Amino acid sequence: MSLEDDLAALKAKRGYLLPHHGLLAMTAPNLLAGYDAAYTALALEDRVLSHHDRECVWLAILIATDEDIATHHIVKFHKAGGTAGEAAAMLRLTATVCGFRAYRFTQRHWAAHLPGVDIPAEWGRTVTAAGQGADPALVHLAACAVQVCRGDQEGLRWQLRDAYAAGVDETALSEALSLTMFPASVPYFVTAAKIWREMIRAGELDATEPFLTWAHFPGQGGHGGGPDD
Image (cartoon, rainbow, N blue to C red; front, side, top):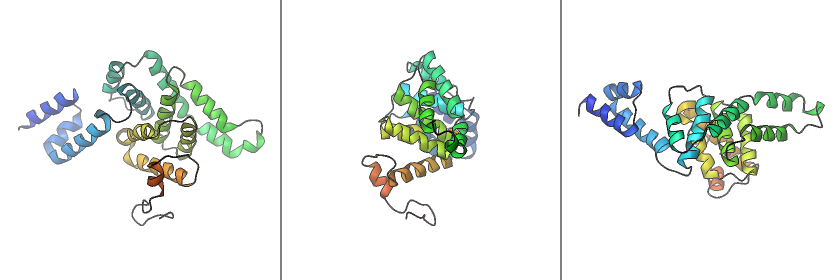
């Protein structure tokens, strides 16, 4: 097949092309094939989330990462039944979670001076209020994903605690966090998995099988190991 045929096939599959598709098709076709397979499994194949919920999470991720080029997800959001109210909720939620630093600062430095203020509880109420107009479980999924996108490790810890307290499905949470790999970076996702695992091992999250098995399996510290291995 010619380069034109390869690009036409890729466009027919996705419905669009971006500049890196043609560059990889021309200079690194094997890499393009691997990338396309990974993207297909990540963003196109059905896992746990409905198309509607997946695209809602995508909106929050793209706003959090200033990713303006991926407007095809807005089209997919509308096709999946997403409403203007839900889009507004994802916008408010993302903007709110991006401001977590104020709560982190207050908890770290002023908690003793504000004994009448339960700062983590206030954060939970703030997130819930920001996400009004969207399903509560979806609000937790999107908030966790945004914390990953921002690289805020403490924020993710707070968000995971709240998600578990709300009974959010762990497999849905895993899918939501995995969507951050391309727009936010694989290292951020790796760190998110590390934090999640640490919290389960510490007994901070009431995890189910097989998440308990994953968390307690040794030797996951990477090259050189880690203190828990």
